[in-house]
Image 1 (spheres, rainbow, N blue to C red):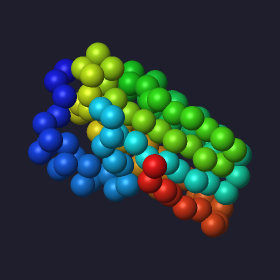
Image 2: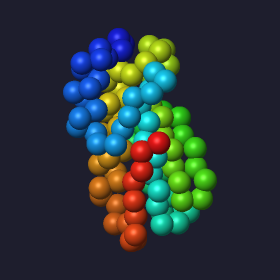
Image 3: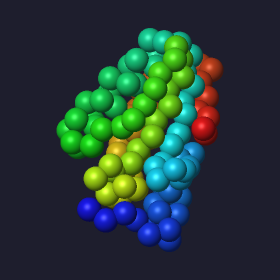
Length: 106
């Protein structure tokens, strides 16, 4: 799979707010109310990623979840990463979170 051109990447990122291109990947950090809420999101993302056979790089500390998407065998961002970013955004929108909740860029 070929990596997206700068133009296609910019266009794709316009449809997944908060995702930023850096170091051959796209990244976003989420901050939730507590650990349980964060783990609920992680579990749902893991299921979606497994179904897509495209897995994120991520780290979690208590209520923070940092996600990086890149296609390793292409050494950059491909449509696989954009599709997974869309799936993650959909998961975030569908979960009835406690308040306050915020989403931050890395």
